[in-house]
Amino acid sequence: MPAPSILRLHLASLNGPDGGTWPVHGFVILHEKAGPILVDTGVGGPEKALTDWRVVNVSAADALAKHDLLPSDIKIVINTHLHFDHCGQNAVFKHAPFYVQRTELDRARRESTPLLDWFDFAGARFELLDGDTQIADGVRVIATPGHTVGHQSVMVATGVDGEELMIGDAAYTSKIYEKPDRPQLPRGQAADREAWERSLQHIHELRPAHVHFCHDTAIVHS
Ligand SMILES: [Zn+2]
Image 1 (tube, rainbow, N blue to C red):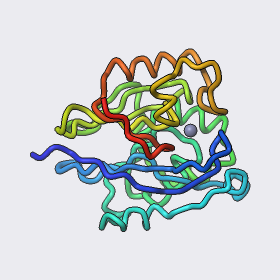
Image 2 (image 1 turned 45 degrees about the vertical axis):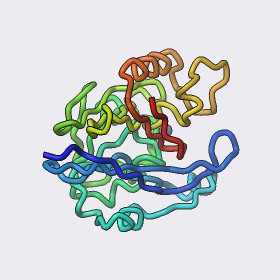
Image 3 (image 1 turned 90 degrees about the vertical axis):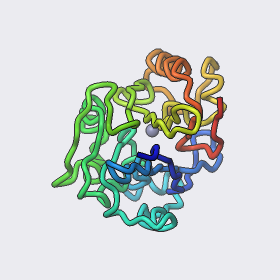
């Protein structure tokens, strides 16, 4: 069986916590046996959120079409976490199960009530995960709490030169990933600074061959 491969989707641009323009990426893992797996679905939410963040949105369907994929082709959705720019278009993938950490769904239901219609709509099927979990051959999630309490990142054995990591918002950018021990972090980067630093240390210890970011076009190669 060929090793899985990764496609990056451009799902939006928004006004980042540093005032600059940030991309929003999702990823598709092309997996021979499990089918296409989507990591994060892009931006959605109440009008106010979209205005506040000055979102220029792309529909997930259009982003997938660039790679000759339809929303219905997606067999599994993994949400790194349930912020509006990572689960905003979950409803496009109603046919697929959403793999989310149990602690993250609890948090979002408590803290993100304006977003409920976007991730907790009628018929949403959650696969609730408790920590590190194998999703398919060569695809696993690792719990990386800190940005949110139930944040997870996705490791894929693509076979090129080790595992590739989709880091989610465990680090917004390559610069933050490479130097997490800075006094000042962008707004929202770490809800729990101690847990966040432990997660980043853990990721570094795993030595991913490539690190892909949601909000940075740079790819870190180690
Ligand atoms: Zn986030």
